[in-house]
Length: 233
Image 1 (cartoon, one colour):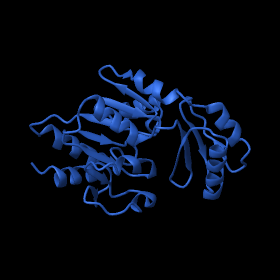
Image 2 (cartoon, rainbow, N blue to C red):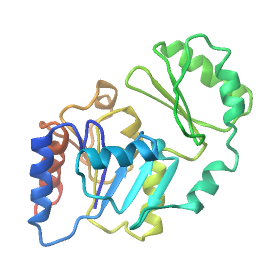
Image 3 (spheres, helix red, strand yellow):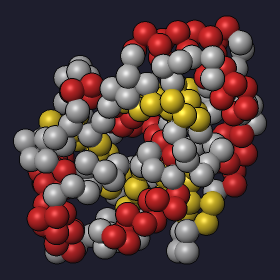
Image 4 (cartoon, one colour):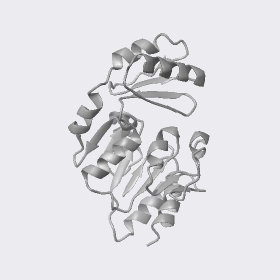
């Protein structure tokens, strides 16, 4: 099972991607695919088509707030209900509007509130305000500018754990792959994981662990490098 981010991880090096897919096709086993991305659902589908990626068994979008499963892909309503129980996007956007350093991202979704923010002090002040207002949330800041406010209990790692439990797949051979700060949670769950060679500095700051392989190759090449490290047979 491969649980991977898309941009900058599975996607970003065509030669490496072709090599990884060829490597998996030659194996005696079938690799189940879980794509876990910050893109919204339609954007993720467009990328899958543009890059001619295999259709995944599970597609997790919007930084772990939405899950689609099966063929054809259908929204997981149990996860959606869990996400939206205490979700207050209007209150979050209203509070964000009082901070000059936050610029709202124009996204066609309501299950996350996303902004551009280049000043970490503003991000910290905004989170303090959310907490003081009693608004349940999860804050993820990555790339030095992308700020996502998500429903409490969400995130890429939480979504992955939900999927593994749903399909009783905790004993499967798995590799988790990512390149940026919003991948940190899922890479530090204790599963065999890889920071691809082009990983952002914010991710490389994670403590060393025998369960986190730091690849020398970028993108999909780094995934293959890590797979042979953790699963040599």
